[in-house]
Length: 509
Ligand SMILES: [Zn+2]
Image (cartoon, rainbow, N blue to C red; front, side, top):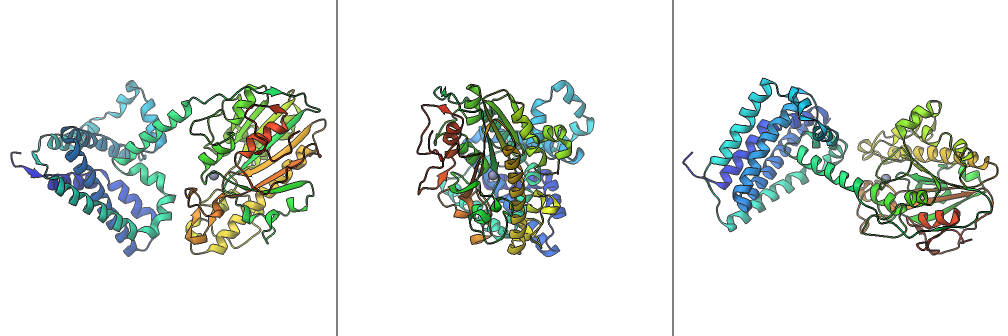
């Protein structure tokens, strides 16, 4: 222990030890679940080991070089956590994903003591504490800033090069990200703990309360149903000129309006948040359902999706609850989400009703999993994006089937709203964002707005009213996500200082 090691050798030892002692389950998972040929698999696993070794090496080097003793303590502590983590992975056949970390933090120590078997304690000593002691006690020559620069550059260069060489596996990694992320030590528990913390913060984030509104007397009680689509791109809706019959029912209606619109973001969380606030904002502002609920509107939020801003209302209903409530309507997809809307509105005593249905309609990567069998009208289909990369027509067929299913859902909803007597009713359908189906080699969505292709932000906005109690405003500009807030306030006869008639798709009445 007297001999001094250079930081390069020290970090290399820690990194290789980490790979062998804590990350075998990760590589086993890659080898077992990737269906590349044996040669390609060896290249993949080999490449990944080098990338991981290089990155872990660099992190150890960085921590010790920049933070000296504190860095050492952190690296030593991760050995013990890694040892505990890999023990759980191997013995309990679990992965350290967000749910697992949530369980971990919510476990009382009195309950947890049953996990501490002699076998585990032995492994914690050998696999965690011994290496941690060595890390704390080994003398290290830290080297110069110049060497630090060269080492960092080389480690990052090697990682990027090999990551680039395995770029064709990008979609496979995307599909298995939860499992892979939950097996990778120490990143599984560090990243997932961080994400958990961010989630808890977001859920407890105080929203900025918007100025009070006044309610105008209504000529008739009113109900507005907002359907939030998932990854529905405008170009594939027949209503907007797509040459395939993807809207066989809605295209026959003369009482609907299909307006062009642009999403303000290309991923669900940001896009739905934009739909639920009146204008761009750096802070969390009072979301539309919360604002309406505070003003006495009967508000329902049903979801088969996730990622909406915090909704503080009484009737927030998840798909699991809806399936129990409407077992006969459960088609394994969106059926229960759309069930009983007419009855819900009819039974409301409120003058103003607002219902949100947050769907999952066209979510990838497996479009064929998003619709019941009878909606498979375009065939043959590619079953997921991975298959679709080599078979764009098949992928498009599968995606278009999700639009045919959406068409059916919306048409049924409109029919049921039309059958409600004594109330003005309206349906607004807007997709959260669009979707790429192979244009420019892109798939799915999530490209930052500055460079996003139009397929990812051009969305449909379909409007139906049971009569001509509101007219659409004529404008050259396509509407955007923020239009929802203002248009719903208008339909429900709510006067608010935050209302902006330029963003309302209707002529203010
Ligand atoms: Zn989405």
